[in-house]
Length: 82
Image (cartoon, rainbow, N blue to C red; front, side, top):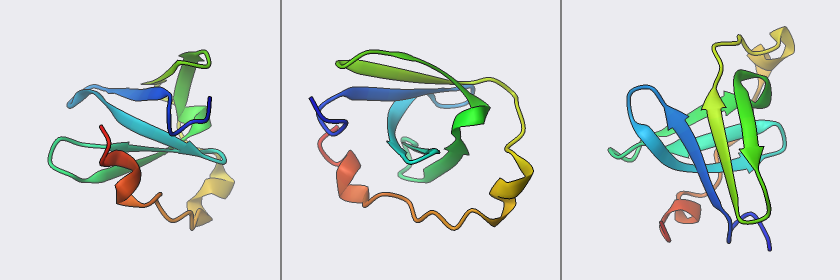
């Protein structure tokens, strides 16, 4: 099963459980208002399997080298099937 078929969620303190996608070491999540949030793996605790992955923000700061992260969010269409 590929990540597009999994039920990936980010648990966000303000927005609750929102759709998420992982791309390399970045985690993108779609807020109810349509804004795409961008976090890094070290900022999350990850629990999951082939069917679902849940990212929970852990309060960690991104690694210093992430300051230059130029990762472009996945196409918004990746969230449209949610």
